[in-house]
Image 1 (spheres, rainbow over the protein chains, first blue to last red):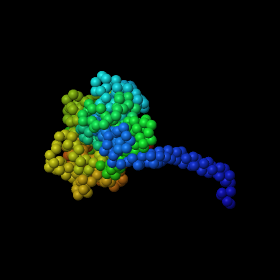
Image 2: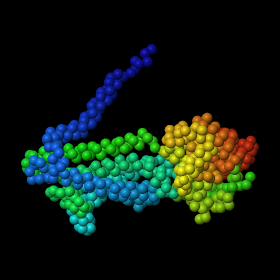
Image 3: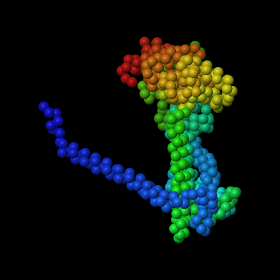
Image 4: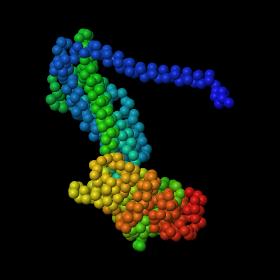
Length: 292
Length: 251
């Protein structure tokens, strides 16, 4: 007796064909993103590589494309990052700790939670308007580095809060129990058990939020950073510019040389973003391997 | 033996569900008391009222008295941090912190303000010795606690609980996630510890209760059905339901 004889081989062939077709479709779906990124990178490299020289980093922008640089924009971006990172870390992680560990699980908490998740999706230009109203006008900070950094802090806070909450929530209940059962207070448990376990996740979230902020233009245009800056900011109240604004500025000029400069500016920005994402990955791997 | 823990007319509610119904009994000092009963009978709930771990569950309400050494632990006289220092707990799953073996044991003493390195070294060594783990880990105290076996991890958790010098040790099915050999080691350890500590253990395993404990309490649907010397309860139960349970007719 042949136990295989009642098999419907035609039907199986049909099932396999469907499997194959979908396999191809999924590969295409994946390729679109990768191809778009490659096209972008190649296009920019072709345009911008010739301008990637010391002038770009050492010189200030000028009316002539030759010898024009983006020193003020690079320094401005880094300064903004340095101001924004600690402020948004403290407030973002603080809020996440409150919501996850201290807040009662009631309607108010859920409302706050809903608000924060919604804020994470609000268009960045809206934060620009908010920053203009609060920091530039109300606090009379003018179009300064500190006003820009604080506006960007508002922009990234919801993202940091949400990702820090997820990292904190991922710490198993049993670790908190172990700490409480030894007589720890809530803060002792949070600081000695929960935060050390969730720090890689929190830092990854913070770095990714920072890399979003580095590439943002709209809110800074709104609060008026779009200026031709031929000096380095020496105090928090100085005016400033950042890389994406410098790129935007160059792109809006008609001469092709400036478009090449813009492309090289994008390369600098991409490299910066890549480095930040790389550090997030390295950080995560380091803690995962150690298990400490 | 003097009763150390005295439970009087204790009722416990999770919101509208009554998990413990008018519980009354005493737990003697420096002996092993086992709580047995089917799942959901309230034995773990009662264990977790002894160090007030139930406080963290929203909607928990308690009536009656729970005296330890004559003091009501739910009164204002007792800080929950002090209570939990005096009443240590070992959980079902070994739950070491993802820190070194040393830092796991030193976690509790540090919480309570001990920072002196020499003093901590001493506490770590004596606690690990009491938990019968010292010889296995003394050469790599800096290694991650997650790198040792499950049975060793559970003994590390016992050492961690002992490091804050408790009087009472609660064990919530502390061997149910372990293999038979590790279980045996923990049972032997518990026998040694009872000379210095009052031990209350919850177990799913009736044979374990019979092997290890001095007193046994049988729970069913939130009530204490029977409470007596272990030998007595297993050989000559006075309640039909106890007999049915220990002879395996339900549960």
